[in-house]
Length: 355
Image (cartoon, rainbow, N blue to C red; front, side, top):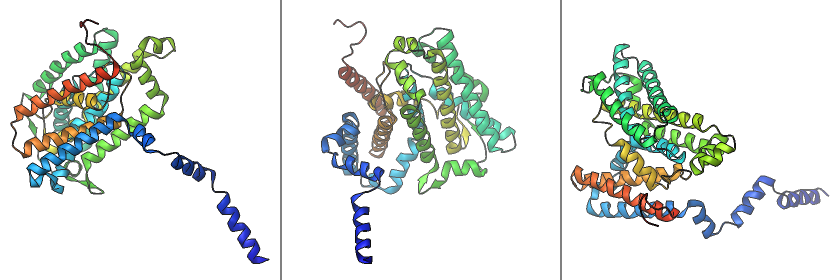
């Protein structure tokens, strides 16, 4: 009798698995190669393929390219523009653009270094001052666009120059150096968490937070709706002005975080040299990652893949000794190629071209 009860109980356990596990198994049974490809996305598969080709070419050209220290260096190098690319993704999905993110990072970097020094090597003062300045600069961008009714490209092109000038005025046009003897900045610049450089972990956390915001919250759905069709979004009751201002404030805060990392890495506030060109890189990464420049489409995952691709390309060109100017030419060409591909996919035509 005892054996029978045990056998019966065992059979019951096998025949009635937990509902959640059963659903998981059911999902696996329906997982075909086609569904896996659809889940990853053909655009992301193209980026992964391009990354494999680039890595293979540079590994063939230079034996040290796949050295673990060089790989870690690639991850560390992409952190600053990766942060800007992630938040640029949100701005573009909302149907706008922020060309001033690099200058905002420059102002935040200078303010962070000056506040740190003025407060007697107080890292908290440096961080809070930089984040506060980033919030204000982003708010100014949003207010100009919403209440000044200025096109986002024109508005942020103007503030790109204004913020760059502001950083140079505050710093006297020179890097604001300080003795890197603070534990926080040393940890931020050289520390590791589970074997990864701290800036890479910061980038991963920000990217995860933005991904969750966009994919799993009403705020994210409204941002996609505004970028997809602002007229329909307004008629459905979404306060577009409020969302646009909030998106630019978010861009300013993340740019400030990038500026703080820049300060820790260089041991100085960088008014221009460390932040110049970041806006082009961030837009290139977002466009390569699948963001439609007309808005309403894009993912953080695609942008991160593009950031890694651009980082691998930059590093490879450096390793084989290609001139920096030619690297800029390559980035511009990539941006043009990404925009052309996006337009072909969406059936858009450039303004002014005959139909």
